Image 1 (tube, rainbow, N blue to C red):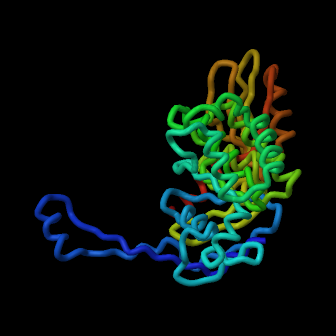
Image 2 (tube, one colour):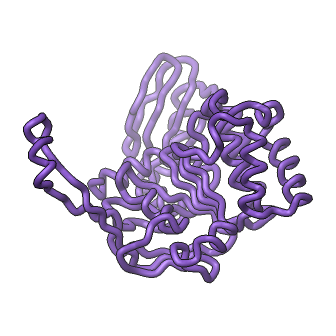
Image 3 (cartoon, rainbow, N blue to C red):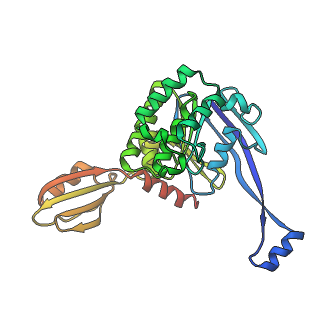
Length: 324
Protein backbone atom coordinates (compact mmCIF):
# COMPACT_ATOMS: atom_id res chain seq x y z
CA UNK A 1 0.00 0.00 0.00
CA UNK A 2 1.15 3.55 -0.80
CA UNK A 3 0.28 6.24 1.72
CA UNK A 4 1.03 9.78 0.58
CA UNK A 5 -0.09 12.33 3.16
CA UNK A 6 0.17 16.15 3.20
CA UNK A 7 3.35 16.25 1.13
CA UNK A 8 4.87 19.66 0.35
CA UNK A 9 7.85 20.36 -1.90
CA UNK A 10 9.30 23.75 -2.82
CA UNK A 11 12.17 24.54 -5.20
CA UNK A 12 14.38 27.65 -5.06
CA UNK A 13 15.01 28.67 -8.65
CA UNK A 14 17.50 31.35 -9.78
CA UNK A 15 16.11 33.94 -12.21
CA UNK A 16 17.75 36.59 -14.38
CA UNK A 17 17.05 38.67 -17.47
CA UNK A 18 18.73 37.97 -20.81
CA UNK A 19 21.93 39.75 -21.84
CA UNK A 20 25.62 39.86 -20.94
CA UNK A 21 25.17 42.71 -18.45
CA UNK A 22 22.54 40.78 -16.49
CA UNK A 23 24.73 37.67 -16.59
CA UNK A 24 27.63 39.62 -15.04
CA UNK A 25 25.32 41.11 -12.44
CA UNK A 26 24.06 37.61 -11.52
CA UNK A 27 27.63 36.59 -10.61
CA UNK A 28 27.46 38.89 -7.59
CA UNK A 29 23.76 39.15 -6.83
CA UNK A 30 21.16 36.56 -7.79
CA UNK A 31 17.42 36.76 -7.61
CA UNK A 32 15.53 33.65 -6.57
CA UNK A 33 11.95 32.53 -6.94
CA UNK A 34 10.19 29.90 -4.83
CA UNK A 35 8.29 27.34 -6.90
CA UNK A 36 5.70 25.31 -4.97
CA UNK A 37 5.82 21.98 -6.79
CA UNK A 38 3.51 20.17 -4.34
CA UNK A 39 1.00 21.65 -1.88
CA UNK A 40 -0.43 19.30 0.76
CA UNK A 41 -0.78 16.42 -1.72
CA UNK A 42 -2.52 13.36 -0.26
CA UNK A 43 -3.74 10.05 -1.67
CA UNK A 44 -3.68 6.30 -0.93
CA UNK A 45 -3.08 3.53 -3.46
CA UNK A 46 -3.93 -0.08 -2.62
CA UNK A 47 -1.69 -3.03 -3.43
CA UNK A 48 -2.31 -4.35 -6.95
CA UNK A 49 -4.08 -1.18 -8.11
CA UNK A 50 -3.35 0.51 -11.45
CA UNK A 51 -3.66 4.29 -11.23
CA UNK A 52 -3.31 6.99 -13.88
CA UNK A 53 -1.59 10.13 -12.57
CA UNK A 54 -2.29 12.95 -15.00
CA UNK A 55 -1.84 16.69 -15.29
CA UNK A 56 -0.23 19.30 -17.56
CA UNK A 57 3.52 19.90 -17.77
CA UNK A 58 4.83 21.42 -14.54
CA UNK A 59 1.86 20.22 -12.48
CA UNK A 60 4.01 18.20 -10.03
CA UNK A 61 3.76 14.65 -11.44
CA UNK A 62 7.49 13.96 -11.73
CA UNK A 63 8.18 15.49 -8.31
CA UNK A 64 5.59 13.13 -6.80
CA UNK A 65 7.14 10.10 -8.52
CA UNK A 66 10.67 11.09 -7.45
CA UNK A 67 9.55 11.40 -3.82
CA UNK A 68 7.91 7.96 -3.97
CA UNK A 69 11.11 6.56 -5.48
CA UNK A 70 13.26 8.12 -2.75
CA UNK A 71 15.13 10.43 -5.13
CA UNK A 72 13.74 13.59 -3.50
CA UNK A 73 13.02 14.45 0.12
CA UNK A 74 9.84 16.50 0.68
CA UNK A 75 9.80 19.65 2.81
CA UNK A 76 7.07 18.14 4.98
CA UNK A 77 4.51 15.36 5.01
CA UNK A 78 4.49 11.58 5.16
CA UNK A 79 5.08 8.96 2.47
CA UNK A 80 5.03 5.26 3.37
CA UNK A 81 5.26 2.51 0.74
CA UNK A 82 4.91 -1.08 2.00
CA UNK A 83 6.00 0.11 5.44
CA UNK A 84 9.07 2.02 4.16
CA UNK A 85 9.85 5.72 3.99
CA UNK A 86 11.50 5.97 0.54
CA UNK A 87 14.14 8.66 1.19
CA UNK A 88 15.12 7.18 4.57
CA UNK A 89 15.34 3.53 3.47
CA UNK A 90 16.51 3.89 -0.11
CA UNK A 91 18.44 0.64 -0.53
CA UNK A 92 15.71 -1.77 0.69
CA UNK A 93 13.09 0.43 -1.00
CA UNK A 94 14.59 0.41 -4.50
CA UNK A 95 14.84 -3.39 -4.38
CA UNK A 96 11.03 -3.49 -4.34
CA UNK A 97 10.25 -0.90 -7.03
CA UNK A 98 10.73 -0.56 -10.77
CA UNK A 99 10.92 2.78 -12.55
CA UNK A 100 10.68 3.73 -16.21
CA UNK A 101 11.22 7.37 -17.17
CA UNK A 102 10.55 8.00 -20.85
CA UNK A 103 13.16 10.78 -20.92
CA UNK A 104 15.78 8.99 -18.77
CA UNK A 105 17.72 5.78 -19.37
CA UNK A 106 19.05 3.10 -17.06
CA UNK A 107 20.91 1.42 -19.91
CA UNK A 108 24.61 2.02 -20.45
CA UNK A 109 24.94 3.85 -23.76
CA UNK A 110 27.93 2.16 -25.42
CA UNK A 111 27.50 -1.48 -24.39
CA UNK A 112 25.04 -4.15 -25.55
CA UNK A 113 21.73 -4.14 -23.70
CA UNK A 114 22.39 -7.59 -22.23
CA UNK A 115 25.50 -6.20 -20.46
CA UNK A 116 23.33 -3.54 -18.81
CA UNK A 117 20.90 -6.25 -17.74
CA UNK A 118 23.74 -8.32 -16.23
CA UNK A 119 24.98 -5.30 -14.30
CA UNK A 120 21.45 -4.58 -13.01
CA UNK A 121 21.19 -8.21 -11.92
CA UNK A 122 24.35 -7.80 -9.84
CA UNK A 123 23.23 -4.42 -8.45
CA UNK A 124 19.87 -5.83 -7.30
CA UNK A 125 21.45 -9.16 -6.26
CA UNK A 126 18.91 -11.15 -8.25
CA UNK A 127 19.18 -14.93 -8.03
CA UNK A 128 20.64 -16.29 -11.30
CA UNK A 129 17.78 -18.72 -11.89
CA UNK A 130 15.14 -16.04 -11.24
CA UNK A 131 17.05 -13.63 -13.47
CA UNK A 132 17.16 -16.12 -16.35
CA UNK A 133 13.45 -16.91 -16.03
CA UNK A 134 12.55 -13.22 -15.95
CA UNK A 135 14.85 -12.41 -18.86
CA UNK A 136 13.41 -15.22 -21.01
CA UNK A 137 9.83 -14.17 -20.25
CA UNK A 138 10.48 -10.46 -20.83
CA UNK A 139 12.42 -11.11 -24.04
CA UNK A 140 9.54 -13.13 -25.45
CA UNK A 141 6.74 -10.80 -24.38
CA UNK A 142 8.52 -7.59 -25.43
CA UNK A 143 10.14 -9.14 -28.53
CA UNK A 144 13.67 -8.15 -27.55
CA UNK A 145 15.55 -10.85 -29.49
CA UNK A 146 18.52 -9.29 -31.31
CA UNK A 147 18.08 -6.03 -29.40
CA UNK A 148 19.87 -7.61 -26.42
CA UNK A 149 23.09 -7.77 -28.45
CA UNK A 150 22.84 -4.17 -29.64
CA UNK A 151 24.40 -1.13 -27.87
CA UNK A 152 21.73 1.19 -26.46
CA UNK A 153 22.98 4.11 -28.60
CA UNK A 154 22.10 2.16 -31.76
CA UNK A 155 18.48 1.50 -30.74
CA UNK A 156 15.52 3.53 -31.92
CA UNK A 157 13.48 5.27 -29.24
CA UNK A 158 10.77 2.61 -29.40
CA UNK A 159 13.28 -0.25 -29.17
CA UNK A 160 15.02 1.42 -26.22
CA UNK A 161 11.73 1.89 -24.37
CA UNK A 162 10.99 -1.83 -24.62
CA UNK A 163 14.42 -2.57 -23.18
CA UNK A 164 13.89 0.04 -20.43
CA UNK A 165 10.65 -1.66 -19.37
CA UNK A 166 12.40 -5.03 -19.26
CA UNK A 167 15.29 -3.58 -17.24
CA UNK A 168 12.90 -2.21 -14.63
CA UNK A 169 11.29 -5.63 -14.11
CA UNK A 170 14.27 -7.98 -13.93
CA UNK A 171 14.19 -7.97 -10.10
CA UNK A 172 10.42 -8.63 -9.73
CA UNK A 173 9.39 -5.28 -8.21
CA UNK A 174 6.13 -5.06 -6.27
CA UNK A 175 5.50 -1.48 -7.41
CA UNK A 176 6.10 -0.12 -10.91
CA UNK A 177 6.32 3.59 -11.73
CA UNK A 178 5.83 4.35 -15.42
CA UNK A 179 6.47 7.86 -16.76
CA UNK A 180 5.53 8.04 -20.48
CA UNK A 181 6.27 4.31 -21.04
CA UNK A 182 4.97 4.18 -24.63
CA UNK A 183 6.70 7.33 -25.90
CA UNK A 184 8.13 6.69 -29.36
CA UNK A 185 6.42 3.32 -29.80
CA UNK A 186 4.54 2.42 -32.97
CA UNK A 187 0.91 1.29 -32.75
CA UNK A 188 1.74 -2.44 -32.64
CA UNK A 189 4.38 -2.00 -29.93
CA UNK A 190 2.06 0.21 -27.86
CA UNK A 191 -0.60 -2.49 -27.83
CA UNK A 192 1.98 -5.14 -26.92
CA UNK A 193 3.34 -3.06 -24.02
CA UNK A 194 -0.17 -2.33 -22.70
CA UNK A 195 -1.08 -6.02 -22.83
CA UNK A 196 2.17 -6.86 -21.06
CA UNK A 197 1.50 -4.36 -18.23
CA UNK A 198 -2.03 -5.75 -17.81
CA UNK A 199 -0.68 -9.28 -17.61
CA UNK A 200 1.97 -8.22 -15.11
CA UNK A 201 -0.67 -6.62 -12.90
CA UNK A 202 -3.05 -9.57 -13.16
CA UNK A 203 -0.59 -12.43 -12.66
CA UNK A 204 1.85 -10.85 -10.19
CA UNK A 205 -0.38 -8.29 -8.48
CA UNK A 206 2.10 -5.52 -9.32
CA UNK A 207 0.98 -2.03 -8.30
CA UNK A 208 1.26 0.33 -11.28
CA UNK A 209 1.38 4.14 -11.19
CA UNK A 210 1.22 5.54 -14.72
CA UNK A 211 1.96 9.14 -15.67
CA UNK A 212 1.44 10.02 -19.32
CA UNK A 213 -0.03 12.53 -21.75
CA UNK A 214 -1.27 9.67 -23.95
CA UNK A 215 -4.87 9.26 -22.86
CA UNK A 216 -5.15 5.98 -24.77
CA UNK A 217 -2.65 4.51 -22.30
CA UNK A 218 -4.79 5.78 -19.41
CA UNK A 219 -7.98 4.38 -20.93
CA UNK A 220 -6.42 1.01 -21.76
CA UNK A 221 -4.69 0.41 -18.43
CA UNK A 222 -6.39 2.24 -15.56
CA UNK A 223 -9.80 2.72 -14.02
CA UNK A 224 -8.80 5.24 -11.38
CA UNK A 225 -7.17 8.58 -12.16
CA UNK A 226 -5.57 11.28 -10.05
CA UNK A 227 -5.59 14.75 -11.60
CA UNK A 228 -2.94 17.17 -10.33
CA UNK A 229 -2.65 20.84 -11.25
CA UNK A 230 -0.43 23.59 -9.84
CA UNK A 231 0.88 21.19 -7.22
CA UNK A 232 -2.56 20.23 -5.85
CA UNK A 233 -4.69 17.11 -6.30
CA UNK A 234 -7.85 18.33 -8.02
CA UNK A 235 -9.67 15.06 -8.67
CA UNK A 236 -9.47 11.44 -7.58
CA UNK A 237 -11.99 9.04 -9.02
CA UNK A 238 -13.13 6.30 -11.35
CA UNK A 239 -12.49 7.05 -15.02
CA UNK A 240 -16.00 6.16 -16.23
CA UNK A 241 -17.67 8.08 -13.42
CA UNK A 242 -15.54 11.15 -14.15
CA UNK A 243 -16.56 10.99 -17.81
CA UNK A 244 -20.23 11.02 -16.82
CA UNK A 245 -19.58 13.78 -14.31
CA UNK A 246 -17.92 15.96 -16.95
CA UNK A 247 -20.47 15.28 -19.67
CA UNK A 248 -23.38 12.93 -20.29
CA UNK A 249 -23.46 13.85 -23.97
CA UNK A 250 -23.26 11.11 -26.58
CA UNK A 251 -21.82 11.26 -30.08
CA UNK A 252 -23.78 9.57 -32.86
CA UNK A 253 -21.90 8.85 -36.09
CA UNK A 254 -24.34 8.15 -38.88
CA UNK A 255 -23.88 6.81 -42.42
CA UNK A 256 -26.97 6.97 -44.59
CA UNK A 257 -28.23 6.57 -48.16
CA UNK A 258 -30.56 9.08 -49.73
CA UNK A 259 -31.85 12.34 -48.30
CA UNK A 260 -30.05 13.80 -45.29
CA UNK A 261 -32.16 13.49 -42.12
CA UNK A 262 -33.12 16.57 -40.10
CA UNK A 263 -32.14 16.96 -36.48
CA UNK A 264 -34.46 17.86 -33.62
CA UNK A 265 -34.35 19.22 -30.06
CA UNK A 266 -31.60 17.52 -28.04
CA UNK A 267 -29.36 17.09 -31.08
CA UNK A 268 -26.49 19.28 -32.28
CA UNK A 269 -24.98 18.75 -35.72
CA UNK A 270 -21.16 18.80 -35.43
CA UNK A 271 -20.16 17.44 -38.84
CA UNK A 272 -22.02 16.99 -42.11
CA UNK A 273 -20.84 15.41 -45.37
CA UNK A 274 -22.75 13.68 -48.09
CA UNK A 275 -23.89 10.34 -46.64
CA UNK A 276 -22.23 11.06 -43.28
CA UNK A 277 -23.35 12.95 -40.14
CA UNK A 278 -21.84 13.41 -36.68
CA UNK A 279 -24.42 14.45 -34.07
CA UNK A 280 -23.92 15.45 -30.45
CA UNK A 281 -26.84 14.20 -28.34
CA UNK A 282 -28.07 15.30 -24.92
CA UNK A 283 -29.57 12.11 -23.36
CA UNK A 284 -31.44 14.08 -20.69
CA UNK A 285 -33.48 15.68 -23.49
CA UNK A 286 -33.68 12.82 -25.98
CA UNK A 287 -32.82 9.15 -25.40
CA UNK A 288 -30.37 7.46 -27.77
CA UNK A 289 -32.95 4.89 -28.94
CA UNK A 290 -35.52 7.62 -29.69
CA UNK A 291 -32.91 9.66 -31.56
CA UNK A 292 -31.94 6.72 -33.78
CA UNK A 293 -35.61 5.89 -34.45
CA UNK A 294 -36.25 9.54 -35.37
CA UNK A 295 -33.32 9.55 -37.83
CA UNK A 296 -34.20 6.13 -39.28
CA UNK A 297 -37.73 7.30 -40.08
CA UNK A 298 -36.31 9.93 -42.42
CA UNK A 299 -33.65 8.02 -44.37
CA UNK A 300 -32.03 4.63 -44.92
CA UNK A 301 -29.36 4.07 -42.26
CA UNK A 302 -26.28 2.16 -43.42
CA UNK A 303 -24.28 2.32 -40.19
CA UNK A 304 -24.72 3.86 -36.73
CA UNK A 305 -22.22 4.13 -33.87
CA UNK A 306 -22.72 5.74 -30.46
CA UNK A 307 -19.88 6.87 -28.21
CA UNK A 308 -19.52 8.73 -24.92
CA UNK A 309 -17.09 11.58 -24.32
CA UNK A 310 -13.51 10.46 -24.99
CA UNK A 311 -10.81 10.50 -22.32
CA UNK A 312 -8.99 13.25 -24.26
CA UNK A 313 -12.12 15.41 -24.30
CA UNK A 314 -12.73 14.77 -20.61
CA UNK A 315 -9.17 15.76 -19.65
CA UNK A 316 -9.27 18.86 -21.85
CA UNK A 317 -12.54 19.88 -20.20
CA UNK A 318 -11.08 19.34 -16.73
CA UNK A 319 -7.95 21.37 -17.58
CA UNK A 320 -10.17 24.19 -18.78
CA UNK A 321 -12.49 23.94 -15.77
CA UNK A 322 -9.62 24.13 -13.28
CA UNK A 323 -7.65 26.69 -15.37
CA UNK A 324 -4.53 24.53 -15.52
